[in-house]
Image (cartoon, rainbow, N blue to C red; front, side, top):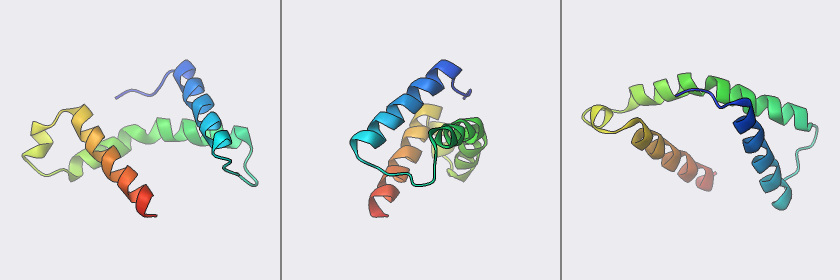
Length: 85
């Protein structure tokens, strides 16, 4: 899975900023440029994270699921953990 294009990264960041603004999420001490750098770094590093997640999946699910299905499974679990925290 490749990194996002600069145009797509900008669109994702714009969406994130809009969501945070509408939710009134404060980021004390963090500038927009800092948050943009964090978004870019996460996108740059996701390849290795996805590879690690894939290595955690036991067979036969590892070979039976598509990459998109594995990512959906990961996101479902991640979102559930966010709700618990």
